Length: 458
Ligand SMILES: *Cc1c(COP(=O)(O)O)cnc(C)c1O
Image 1 (cartoon, rainbow, N blue to C red):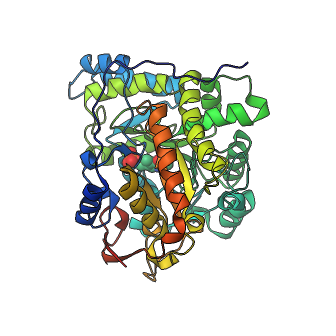
Image 2: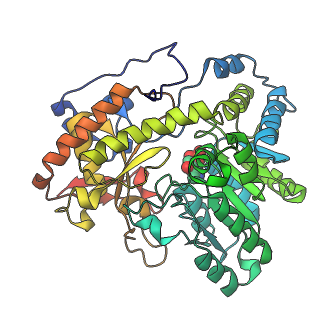
């Protein structure tokens, strides 16, 4: 018999979390204007809002915290981070930033101008936000299979080369600052991009003289999927695959809150020294001097250590298998989820889960609220609220999918927490016919409304 997977770590410190009653939760979510972001964390029992910055650091990372060099310029922590980035990604130049979107802000300040067109695979919301804020356009070139929730395609993050070629050939080169490849593709469900696709995208972009940018938050999880699903790479180590992936990128932005397993931090990686110099000016204006850019020395140390831990096979296996375990339990019980199961989260198809709730009443948000009320579990809507309004027509943009995401923090929850989560969803699914109405908007911000939106029960 093959032994089951088990976590390659044990627990040295615990943090208490509290259960609550359904009455408590109804009161709290009403006070939070039915916005899950507005709940206090102590009102949540199992927090699956995001896997961003919510991971547990290791004893080695905590030791690195003590070794942090807090010098303003030229800190040893900066060099530790530089060495780790170069070692793992191969990028020679880098700028630290306080998180991923700050990396986008600095890089795009140089790269993107009004009227530009930025093709990619389902751009992440902050990426799209930074593009649209500059009055440029993000064009989604993800393969069509990504939008069929049960299509078992192994690389649903892939870019459709025909769609990309159309954008590249129909627009002047000056209007396309980069092709963005998001690994893994967060918006389409934590789905990986194959190395075959990465290579083909790079080749096509090269032929048009356009650089390739990796939005790299979950690059290690992407490498794990390549190892498992792409034959040619079965015998390569995660680090070898990571190196090969990044060899096909001209620049990278990183949210270190994901695969570098730290609570805060990010960076930009460059090959082109001139671009690095131009971005340094914006880094100094927005983030901080180029050897700390919004991070303390101790955090740069922990990040460097996290890059090594996050690219170890045993760690990645236990992380991704935990997500898969939850997905399998839901799937076995008939709950409609996106397949194959992605790297960091389970995505529940809310339109199928709550078929009677009208589309204009925010179906995935409704499911998220009901799950919280029933169980104290917090997920997040990846649907119409997130998709926001069209910047020109101001109409609601209805995405192809209406999803409730349950993101699993790294090294944080036990298998019992996962079992509790599955049981809560199965119970809710059994009484799904009872849910007929959703919510309407009382207040929304002009961009990225989902963070602060206020809702009313219909
Ligand atoms: C999280 C994320 C970002 C933004 O990073 P932050 O650290 O949250 O600012 C950008 N792109 C992708 C793919 C992400 O997952």
